[in-house]
Length: 134
Image (cartoon, rainbow, N blue to C red; front, side, top):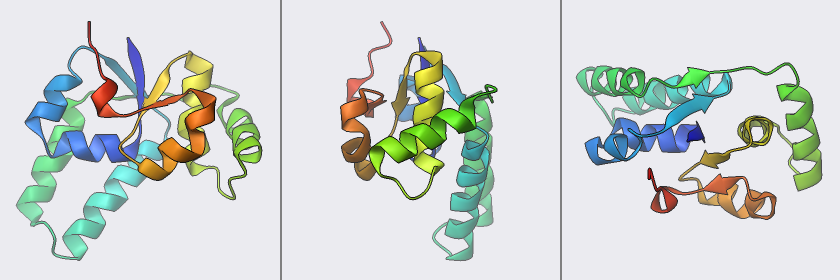
């Protein structure tokens, strides 16, 4: 099964062997935005001295080990625009994850409660408790 991995779920998996193992049976994909969000969050944590440089390097390697395929369907941004409009979102960031899920007929794995609430009616979001690799 394919899942769209958002930055919140990626960051959780990067910091937890158990979370990475739970994703082992899935094909993971993400929009190009995923790379920027993950990199920015790690750099911010380092800048704020919440993690060390060594920790940041471990997390970056963990992200690489997830083998997330970054995909950009031709109509990704148009569908994200439509979803953002439909959901009343000012920005299209979250809508890019939702658009990719819609285009690939799958769901977005997220730990972001705000995204789950805001996109619940789309049926495109799930949290890690809903994972079932079987």
